[in-house]
Image (cartoon, rainbow, N blue to C red; front, side):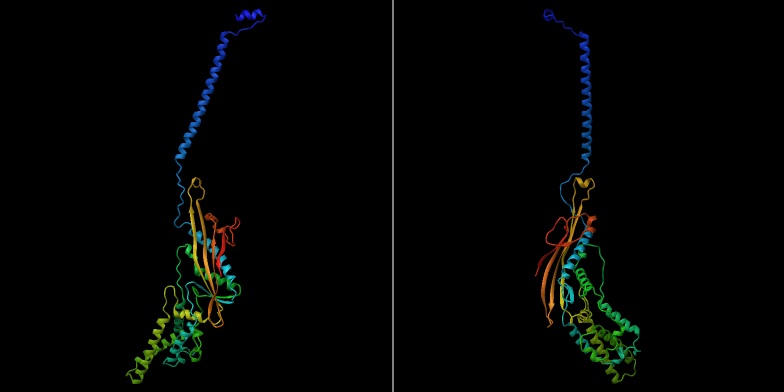
Amino acid sequence: MALLAAVGTGAMTTMAPVSAQSTDTDAQITAIETQIKLLEAKADLAQAKVDRAAVFLDQLPEFDGKVTPGSDTGKFESTVLAAAALGVVTDAIGDLIVDKNVLILTGSEQFQFGLPSALNAEMRVLKHAFPLPPESVADCPATVEIAPATIAAAISTFAGLLRSDVTMTSINANAIDANMLVNSLAAKLNSEGQTAHVLSGSPGSKLLAKDACGFDDMDKWIDSKNLGAKYVWLLLARHKAKSRLTALNSIKPTTTKVKAEIKAVTGWVEKFDMFNATVSATQKTVPSTLAAAIQASELEDDLKAIVRVDVEMAGGSLKNSKNIGTFFGVDPLRVTGGLIASYTIFTISDSGRAKPSAWGMWACSSDQMRLGKVRLAKFSTGEHISETNPNLCWQVQAF
């Protein structure tokens, strides 16, 4: 019917053969099948990548977000940071000290006014009671009975009273202590033209053998100066007394006069030995009475101020982070460091009384930084931490 209708209108329609239509359909089916295979291949590749990623992720560690501190790692770096802060605190405290002659002590060190006078009085009594001719003790260079080696031995004995034993231990944050602040502050003041003295760690005063000569004269024992030289004279006098006892005990027969001299010389030696045992006794952290008196005798007359400083705390913290970044090589360690220090300034009046005139406390704290950046860290003073100044020292309180 369709063909008749087309003829009736005068139009002619050409129909494709059935075999040609079948060929086109086969080509389309083949193309579709090719696309399906390509899609399947891509899907297989994507799944392979997923499977590979899953295997890789199975090898990654699990993280719970916790921070585990290390044992000794970072202690050296914290000490370096505390040392850098110490320099800033030293400058800050030093700028407050205006007196020209000061003594700087730790919080636990003792300095006793009047000790040299008290000790000199005891030594003067021993000198006065010496039972042998005093000019035979240290009348240098005329002395012939006491060899120079004996004087050197006496000097060595004296030097031992002031010697400090130093033990090096492993570095930790406690290496920055009050003694270090004392020495740092004294060095700063002395370099700027002031006169600053220290007790802890000081080698004391240099004493030569000739310094003990000339103290046969009783008038030189009135004031409390030259205690070291006077002590050496007494040591030499003891040696002279022991030598005299050896000579007296060899005299036969022993006369009444000889017995009396032996008794007098023996009694003096015993008194000196008791005195010496008392004044030369030392404790682990406390110098002998003699050493303290010798040091004080050189200071107290012209001293204008005493400054006590202490390091209340020095150290830092170590942060050891574990996360996906550290698994791929990011440095997990961060360290901080700093200290807290205090000071008290005592002004000495003309009457010799010391009264506190200033007190304060400084704190220093660094930003968290990598271990390799510690050597580049610098501290500065201020009130607020900024991006350009993350390592800060500030005055906590002051009067």
